[in-house]
Length: 120
Image (cartoon, rainbow, N blue to C red; front, side, top):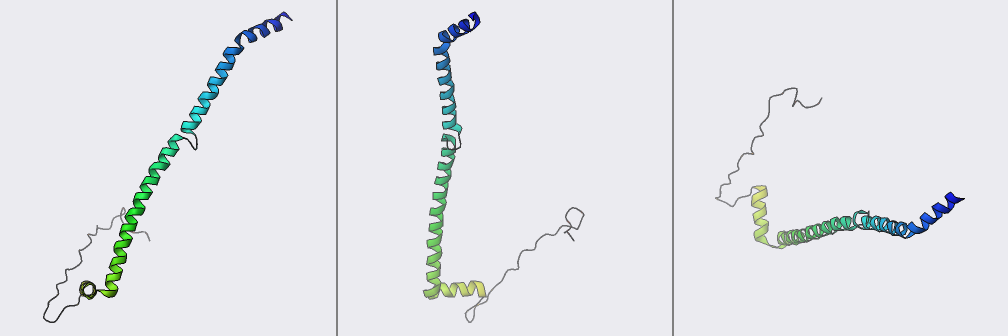
């Protein structure tokens, strides 16, 4: 009986410190979760940076899309653009002109060894 009473007295003396310690541990847990948790500040910063990068990429693609749309419109309606493409892609020439076509660069081939031999 005295042992139980002694433990009870010690608990009553230390209960404020135990409660403060428990609250401190809980606060540390919540703080850790807020910073490093699945939806914490670290993840938020990464997602924010990714969002900014994607916005930049979307803007670049919109600029490229407008440039391509303008090129398509020019190919449909501008005779100079049509002529330029025909001359470049189909190697067309006006009477009296000479078209010089450069040969395609050769791809250097390595001698066949066991390291670079294609699979059978």
